[in-house]
Length: 296
Image 1 (cartoon, rainbow, N blue to C red):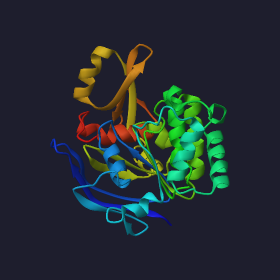
Image 2: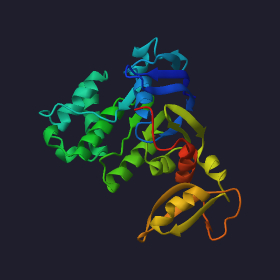
Image 3: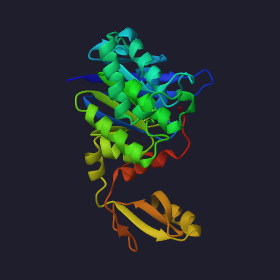
Image 4: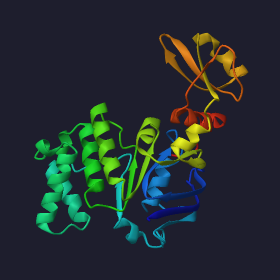
């Protein structure tokens, strides 16, 4: 079984920002979710795994090969969709994907043509294959980015905020693609969208301030909160008082008022017991760290 091992990984930028702090993770075959707020260090970790930048200390091994000592080895096996990317605007979608296929070593013309066709169909861009990428919407570019990451059948797939810019239909379609390829590969889904991890991943980690603060399975971590998550609808101006009296882990607007989610080991009078979900796990985990983050 394929395994990615990250040990003691740390990275501090020249401006003093500690983006990663002694990160340790064991990631095995299947879908792995990396959750964290914007700026928590997710993108730094993804770029480091992809050998696009180096760490100050620590190691990363994939199938027992040290990726920092032998970066070319992992690049042959990697499909990467970064958070921010762009294409040559004057190339068509077909030429763009064909170009990436050549870069990834698919030299047989017939094989490459078939793969380009297959992936343009999979990401719903075949009908736009002759159009210039410079005229594409953000969602269309995102779909083309997904295709270039997966076209060479990589063993390790990293997708950083992949559903940004996708409408609900496109997002669901992308989920289906990831679920299909995740059966025999390591797929790391880095996101701040809890539902993406809940829908797709069998294992997850939560990162904040550049540190991994939880690793487990969505089912097990959710089960730990059963009987401890309570909710109540309050007036907006009551929020500060409830925060002072209870462990309010999240709140959201509900029919003009606020619905608060509270963690408590004991029954709370006037509150409704709530079935926990992964969002509750996420907010409970980062609750004591506040909103400020230290990575990028």
